[in-house]
Picture 1 (cartoon, chains in turn purple, cyan):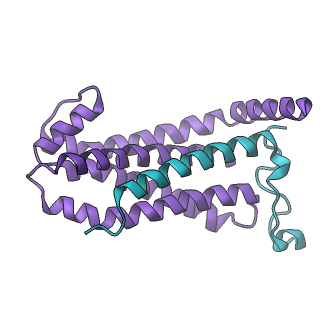
Picture 2: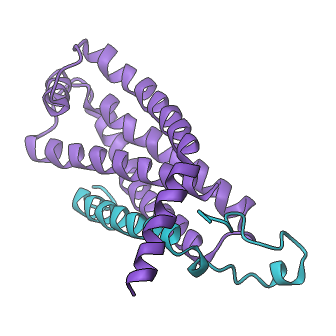
Length: 162
Length: 57
């Protein structure tokens, strides 16, 4: 048992070091995509970069441009769906069952997110110019955070599959 | 009215992150578990082995 665990941990270390370059490359491309998606929110609300980001989000909401901030999570979802469809469709015959299960899990979340976001984004865009209620703002901020986290997890999972 | 509540999205997100983290770790630690059951692969119509077969070894 100890030997199996030791070999497993050694395999994890070798896998991560072997594919470190791919993980970093995907991470950088993902960060650039997300940063570009942030521009409309920062530019339209005319706010500076602030820390913590939740304070900046609150300020963007007060100025009535929360839909532009929510748009960031839409871009993250599109990136994730594009990459997942790529491995699911193009490489379906060569993937192991764990990789397939992970891809389907990621896609499942993105479908749930899209079902929420399509209607909700339209509603937010309709109420542009006025702040959304505090409780909805709080949940939507959580949705944005969790979408970013799932998005980067999917990118790392794909980078470690290549 | 939204089709799904934001709470559902947040919970689904947490579940996905946990599943992805555990799955990536297991696949990296014990790559032999991540077998490919595709019949077309066995017949040799596509690639004969999983793309990530070595996975650390």
